[in-house]
Length: 345
Image (cartoon, rainbow, N blue to C red; front, side):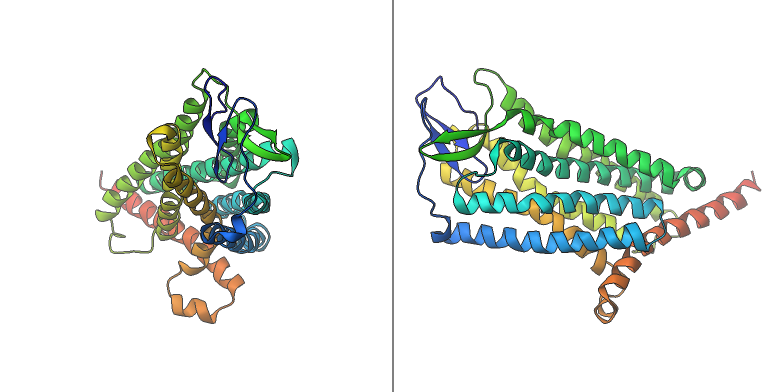
């Protein structure tokens, strides 16, 4: 929340809880996280997310980056894994801050950690949009896609998505700052009073990082479904299964966060406890998305029972490869069908 000096007090959200800000101080309480069941639960979940996300995404990066042939599909998944891996690397800072109820890592990290969080959010959703459009084009214009879908162009698209994500994450470095009070340092959102910076940032994040991308994704998949229903692959349930799961997971993980961030803009209208709990849960769910992606890579194959018998590395490699093979088979089938049809025109 904003640190406002026009009123006697205002609620300020420091990343883990609300504090009451006055003109001269921010009232602090002794750390009680480890004495509260809800806080302990959040910490435990965050530690599990860090361990699973760090190791899982490292494995995806190793397999898709060094053990598989470089294709358009491996580039998509490699970029998603890198985004989640970087996020998990910075997660211990938030865990320590939650436990200590204090920020001890300095002003630079106060700005950097939120930047990485939003970089992960925007890069993930932008990449999901790119992949959805790629799938849609592959179905609607298979011959063109077969000739134009190259590794070089995919790499350029990924770099562009990361640059846009970085630009959208810049407000975190501008408005995030440390506050010193009662021998404690906190990392808070320090929006200027008297302007609409806070609302502008929150609304732009919700629109650009959630609403608009999902409209595009839903549109793309609606076109894909309609096209598949009239094609020879209509009976196949395999195409796009991994991507559908990734998109659904992203939606479930990030929706609560955006909802409570928007509610927090008018915090005076809602119960303080509900907002605090909602933001904690929303942040935890958002973080969970970073370790769920590699889990989906492993267990979204044709036969779950077989995956239990195979090694984790080989299963991960097969899961990523199957998605690329599915698109390639569809492009080949569509090309041959179009070629036969052209002889009758």
